[in-house]
Amino acid sequence: MELLHTSLLRHARNCNFFVEAQSRVEQDAVVKRLFAAVAVAAFALPAEAAPTCHSISVTPLAFGNYDVYNATPVDSVGTISYSCPPPLFPTVTIDGGLAFAGGRRRMTLGAGVDFLSYDIYSDAARTTVWSSTPVFVLPLNSTSVDFYGRVFALQDVSAGSYADTVVVTFNF
Image (cartoon, rainbow, N blue to C red; front, side, top):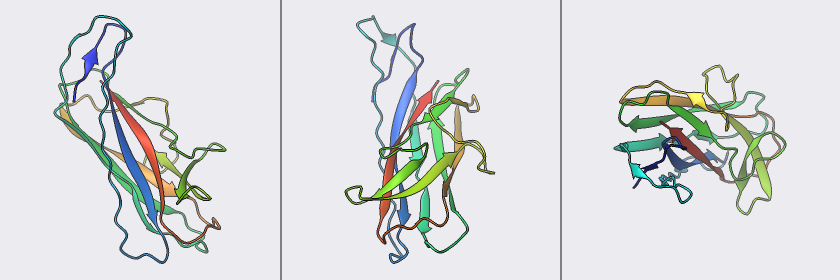
């Protein structure tokens, strides 16, 4: 893993992770995890060595079984953990995912013929959607930040395993 710094760009790390809801028929499905870090490249500008993070990891959301007849949404909590030099103004963004449409993140079944709408929030009350708008996180050397997921109730979807991949970008 390598991180480059220029005077025009802030330090950034990207992490991909899966968001998966288990079907109502599958009792013990395993949440897939994917972690990838990508280097931020400068556009033909000279780069200088920058402090690097020792670890950035994401614990994905695991919604469990979804009942199409239940009027209560299904909630889950995930964690972004990092160990970096103390950042001054660290922020985190989360993109819309692979099947974003109509203002909602969507998990897909198989080849994307059926969708299960969900969202990710920055607060436990699930009132502030965590999106590509940067969210300030604590400027500590090593810490964890929780994020909160919700699959919306009463969606008429086919049985099966639904998943999505979103990109988490940590700027420090």
